[in-house]
Image (tube, rainbow, N blue to C red; front, side, top):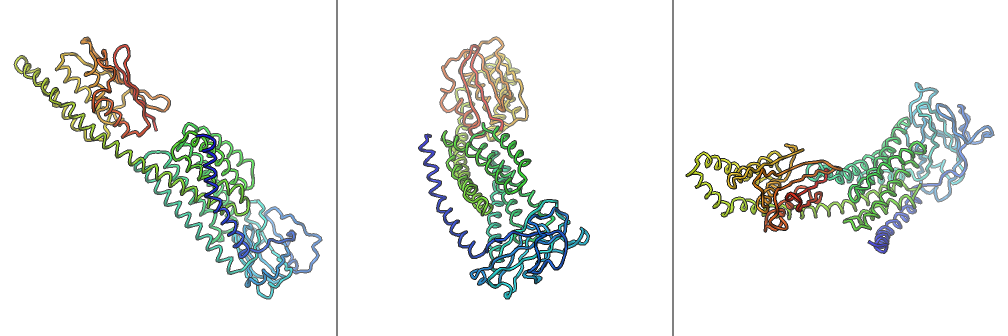
Length: 572
C-alpha cells in the first residue's frame, strides 16, 4: 500500500466523523446554553475558622485569602455570583455544588438554603457530605443582580488532597432532567459494552482460542465498569470520603483499557510488535508517578495507547493486512476527543468515541468470524472427502489382492505366520476405522497406527521396518493419520534398502513453535511425493488447515538418505 492509499483512509475517516463532530458541537452549545449557567467571575475568598457572622453580605473581607486550607480543617468560603436577566427567567433556579470534598452548610445572601452532611470539629462530630448537591434557590432571592454564596465547611474525612468546588447555576428542574437523561444514555452504552464483552468472552472460551477475542472481551467489560465508576455520581451522592477511591478506580480502569487497546491491535494485526506493550507499560507507570492530576493521567494513558495503536495499524494498512482499515478508522474518534474536546466535554466525547471504536471493530471481527466459518466449512468438506480417499487408498483392490496372495502362500507354508499377519491386518483396519471419524486424536494413537501399518508391511515385504520416535508427547492432540500418510508415502515412493530400514519421527519446541520432523529412508522413485492424486500431502495439508487454520507450515523434499517432511505449528 502506498501513501495515497493511507491518505484515502484518513479522508474517508474525516468524511465519516466530521458530521458527528459538528453535531456534537452544535448540541453542546445548545444544551449548554439551556442547562448551565456561568461560572463565578469573582474569586472565591476563604478564611479558616468558624464565625456565624461570615454568612452576611457586607462584612470586611480584608483578612480573607484565595487559598483553601489543607485538611483536616474548619473554614468558610464566599463567592459573588452574577445573575443576568436571561438566567433569572429559568425559575426555579438551582445551585449545584459538585466534586467538593467537605461537609457544609450553604447560605445565599445570608439565608440558609441547605446542608450537605453535618459540619463538625472532628471525625466524631462530622457526618460526611455527598459529592454532589443541588440547592433550590427561593424565587425572591434569584432576581437579576449580584448575589453572595457563603459556605461553612469542615473536612475531617478528607485524604489530605484539596479540591475546589465546582459551581453550576441553572434551572433546578432542567439540571435534574439533564443528569438523569445523560446518565441513562451512558448506562445504555455501558450495557452494550457488557453484552459485547460477555459474547466475545464466550467465543474465546467455547470455540475460537484467539487472543484478539479475549482482549476485545476484556476491553468491552472494562469500558462497562469505567462508565459505571465515572457516572455513579450523577445518581448517587456518595460520601466525599469515598471520592478518591472512585477516582483511583477510574485511573486504574483507564490504565488497563489503554493497554488493552494497544494489545488488541497488536495481537490482531502485528503480533511481532508485542514488545511495544512493554514500552507502553513503562511509560504509563512513569506517568503515574509523574502526574498528580487524575484527569491528566487518564488523558496521557489514552494518548500513549492511541499513538502505539496508530503505528501498529499504519504498518498493518501499509502491508495490506485484512480488516486493518477498519481498525485505523476506529481510533479516529478517540483522536478527535483528545485534540478537540480536552478538557471540556472530554469524558463525554471519549465514551462516544469508545462506542464508535467498539462498533467498528465489532463489525471487523464479525467479518472475520464469517470468513473463518466459510473457510472452516470448506476445510471440513475437503477433509471429509480426503478421509474417504484415505480409507479407499488403504483398502484398495490392488492392496487387498497382494495381501490375499501373500496370505494364501502363508496359509499353505506357515499357518502361524498367516495367523499373525491376519491379526496385524485386523488391528490396523480397526484402528484406521476408529480414528477416521475423529477430528483429533492423541499422539500415542497415531504412533500405534504407524507401527501397526509397518507390521503389516513387514509381513508383506519381509523387510524389518522400524519406527524410531523422539520427544513425542503421548497425550498431545493432532489431526488423525497425518504421520501414517507420510509413512505410507515413504513406503510407496521410496526404494528402501532391506538392511534395517528405519523411519524417524521427532518433536521439538523452538521459538514458540512445535516442529515435527518425519524422515523416510531410501531413494525416491519420484521427484515429489505430492504427485499421488487425492492423497499424500494433500490430505495432510487439509487436516492441518482444519485444526490450526493458517498457523502452520509444511516443508518436504529429498535428502541424502531419503525423504524428509517438516511440519511447523505456532504454539498459541
